[in-house]
Amino acid sequence: MRTRSRKLPKKNELTKNSFIPHPPPIHGFELRHKSRLRFITNAAVSQSITFYDLGDTILFATTALAPFQVFDFVKVNAIEVWSIATVGTSTSVEVTFNGIGGGAAGDNVTHTDTSMGIEPAHLRVSPSTRCLCSLFQPATSGNSAFQLNCPSGSVVDIILEYRGATNATTDAAQNASVGATVGATFWRGLDGLAVAATKFILPNGISQF
Image (tube, rainbow, N blue to C red; front, side, top):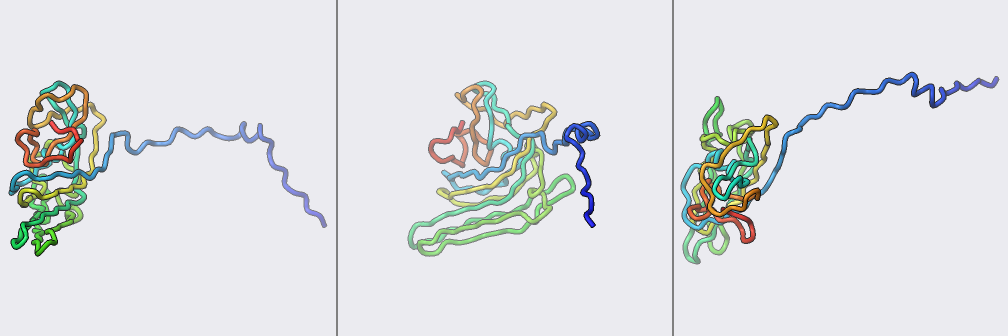
């Protein structure tokens, strides 16, 4: 016995009986950016790097002297350091996630490596899950993200994740710039200082003020 196939509704009937869904939700209207930044030290470094320093790594100039942060929040994904000593000597590099604040702390693990022969000292380290700098922190926080110890001539890479805010906040950099181009984006060393004073120099061709 032949079965009668079910008739499909006509196109106009589908349209007539269907509901138009509401627009989809948007999860993340804010500006986001993930970047690996590279610095070459021009002097020995032994200091804590704050979240304010990290927020000041990417700035824009409202005047030649008044830079503002591009992003409102920052976290550390990884740090990589290389340093090579003169032949016949050795050198060491060290990173400690030692920050504390806002009910959270760093893992306080000290990572260190020492060169030997022609092989450089080298570290690639990440903070533990849910320690202070693995979570987004305000880019104007004076809390320490990590302690860095390395000699002059070291190459320091840091992988940062940035988030903006949607409530029209503005955060000024810690230190003034000199001769920055108004409206331009520029970069700054890990110590938050302008190019004339910083121990962290960017690769050639990157705007640093």
